[in-house]
Image (cartoon, rainbow, N blue to C red; front, side, top):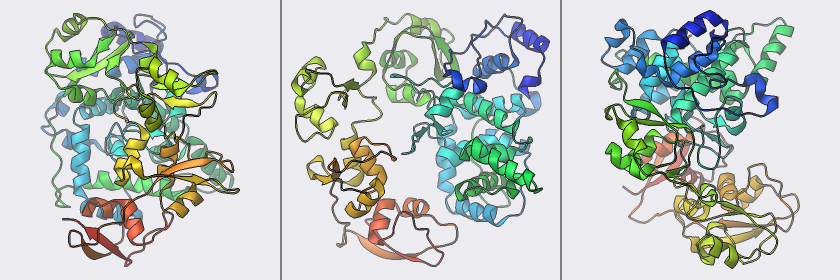
Length: 527
């Protein structure tokens, strides 16, 4: 474990590697017990901790040459496969998950493509920390390595960090940046978190991963219950939620398939065993569009490498920029030569809190937008405002997340003109209302900017969008599909290129019902 390194070793490592410190981390005082602090002391400080060394090296491990025996691999995935060390027992849940991945090999290709700019960095850091290489597969289970993956439970990034856990492990979250989506920073935080969990679950990596998924308190309590009852405390012996008990089999199924690709007749993903990107330190405001020109990239390509940025204009601050490894040696000087940019505070938020005396026309004029755009962005059916109400300012919200009404309407295939209003009744919940309106809880939450556990009040107005019926004409061919073991609504939807919501509607299935092998589903295919 990193914490067991001596101060002398830490100092020696720091002295031999002149690398910049990582960006400052902040956390509430109650969260200090989790906090790593790579930037709390200069790198030449002889009292620097082993964690500071680890984090400094992590961000700049491209300066370090890999071990010769590891460099000989042509394929980075093979390098991972040959070093995996976790035991994989014979277990029906693992077999079920193997069958799922064998039927959905496209998922592995998608994950490999998403991971390509970052995987070498993650692998070399896992090796340096002497952590199981199976952990490089964890973001496939979490997000298919998609940095923009998120859910209505407000977890984000390839490691699916919640806001609180992210802050606990030093991930900044502000108006222009979210460290949970920064692959480099979130990977550092994920490894810190997993090592912390490992040291608190009797050094059982499966239990550590389970705690990463289900929450440490739940797993710690399960271990304590078993210990008090004289039962084994390994992962397989713990009483945990179904989601978590299927999470570990997914990881181990992936590991088994990757280790034995020939046996299972699946093509192993190909990826060069070398760094695809490098990290440079920036200490000034930067226009990403101008930076992309200098790097000879599109803005979309640069943002793909730096998904933590919410805006295309980054304010004056100290942060890191991920660039292609092929970038010129003097790229830092070239970027430093770009005109400095200043970001107005209002453009960095995209949100406005209504004050006494405000009106839509006044707010629209101040923010250089129109009343109609404000109403559309905030699902407002009238011009009435409440003091303290939060408004989304169109054009200033983060570019990769357009206004909610437009996004949700696009997802459901409806236009903004299809908006209707539901009046909350006593005892209503989002789930019950969604059931009545034949929409999902997530859609209602998004359309009305509510948390999934929001308290509703009788008389409250909720906006929702009507949807057209699925096509049943000659343009849409109907078919009957028989559910197989291991199938899920998501896997069936992906296979036939339809939406989960449509499968639910076509078959009158409730969202909280599990599919059963042999169950027949009606699907409408347009091609």
